[in-house]
Structures are given as C-alpha cells and as structure tokens.
Amino acid sequence: MKVTVKVTSDFICPWCLIGERRLAKAIESLPAGSEVDIVWQPFELNPTMPEAGLDRRSYRANKFGSWQYSQMLDQGTVKAAEHDDVAFDYDAIDKTPNTFKAHRLMWLADQQGLAQPLADTLFAGYFEQGLDIGDSAVLAELGEKVGLDRAEVLVFLASNQGKGEVRAAEDALTDAGVSGVPLFEIGEQRISGAQSQATLTAALQAAMASCQDGFCTQG
Image (cartoon, rainbow, N blue to C red):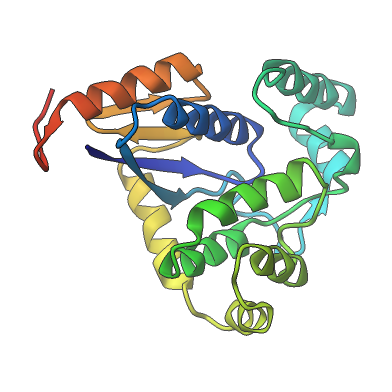
C-alpha cells in the first residue's frame, strides 16, 4: 500500500512546522508495510521580501500592528505545539528571510532523494536555532548536514538553476487557488492548516483503503 502526500509549505510558517510534525507522527502510526511518498511543493508567504530579508521585529510589528501582538501570536504557536516535539526559540530569530533560495535548495535535494530530511533541517534551523535560511552559506551548511555537497550547493545557489522550475511550481499552485499554507493533499482529500494527528491519520487510512494491489480508486 503506497500513498502520495503532497505538502505545500513555507519554511518560515510555524503552522507548517507543526503540521509537518503531526503528519510524521500520523505516518508512524500506520500499519507495517504502509508506504507514504511525500512530495514537497513550494509556497512563499512573503514573495516580495527583499533577498536579504528584513529585521524580524520591525517587519512583524509593521505587519501585525505591534511587536506585542506579534509576540502573542508566537506564544499561540508555542502553546499549540506543546505535544508536537517542536522547540520554538523565537528569541533566537533576528530576521524574517526571503525563502526562495530555500525552496530552490529543496528542488535540488529532491533530485537526490533528500527533500524530506532537508525540509526537517530547514524548519529546525529557522524555528529552533534562529538561523537565516535565506543566506546561501547557511543553506549550504544545512544542505551538507543531510548529505548534499556544500561547495556544490553554493555554486547552485549562485546560478539560475532551479529558479524557473520553482517559480513555475509556485505559479501552478496560485492558479489552482492555493492562497495559504500548510496544505496537505492526501489521496483525494485536501486538508488545510495544521490539523490534528488524528485527522491526518484518518486521511492516510482512507487513502490506503482505496489502494489495493497497486491500484487506487476514488472515494
């Protein structure tokens, strides 16, 4: 039994991290022999963000009306993730980065079968370590942690490789009406937001039930 799950996400979205951790637990709960193929799809929450990023405090204060309200929102995600193995460290985050390079690196990692570990590393790097995941040197270091060649990553990010493919993928999602993340496409179901582990497990089980002997049916 094999099911493909499409995950549309951005690496500076806390609910995307929470949802991804819940999906991982849902997959772990499936019966032995179950196979889940995760396909990562790019989405930028801030597509007009300067390439160098912006000071997080200033950016969030402007976006949400005040720094205090921004901190309240942050604490809401901390509370929501109490049982999801997420160690948010918002105090360590100085910058809101441009994530286009991170999505390009995911495109490269996918060519080598390393998209899932890189996604985990990017989320943890930003939310749990406060790293600037818009910086090429930081991305090269994170890429090396999951098996990519550091020097090759730097050359790749300095080139135009993957730019067209990532932009095309983003545009296709926009054209399909996707305007927020996370979004999980599990079989015929589309699940928006960081839903519970139980919800994701049920969706996976339903998708598995419709697939028998290498053939999947609707419904």
